[in-house]
Image 1 (cartoon, rainbow, N blue to C red):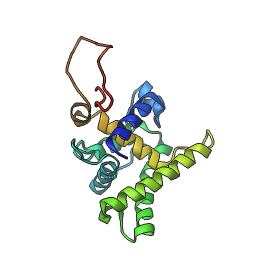
Image 2: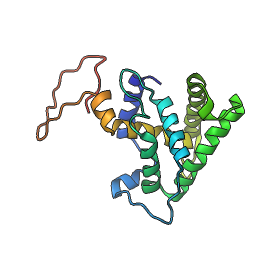
Image 3: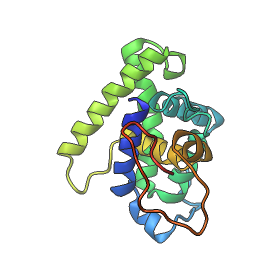
Image 4: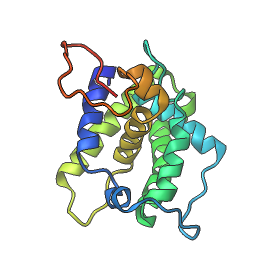
Length: 186
């Protein structure tokens, strides 16, 4: 996925449904009894997954925005217990998929191998979403991808470096010139 596709995807994401969307509307609240623990290795793993989805180009990538930490906070504070478990198990499933396909863990893979694996998982989650029943939970990779996009494009780096940003408190200009290829406005 290149930067332009990511910006298009975030537009869909922010306008569409996010896993745990009711929590965004009602307010995210951490519940100590349902919080899962994420190790430093889990956060580093999620940073690498996020950086594969949104790598560094002319702007910093998702790892620079500390998206891995963001994901853990959002999962613990905003996801229902079942979704938390799916996400947490997804870390293991993703690493197992890497070992099955490339005979090494995700963290030891080359950037090209990581991209190929995540592209295959993205196709898998899209097919899953197409055929899932309403009562079924989302695919773990869909959660990771959504949180990557949300975390990056709501971070300071994503807002000020990946998109055009002009600080204008108290003012709104609904008619801003746009040329094809321009960065989206933050």
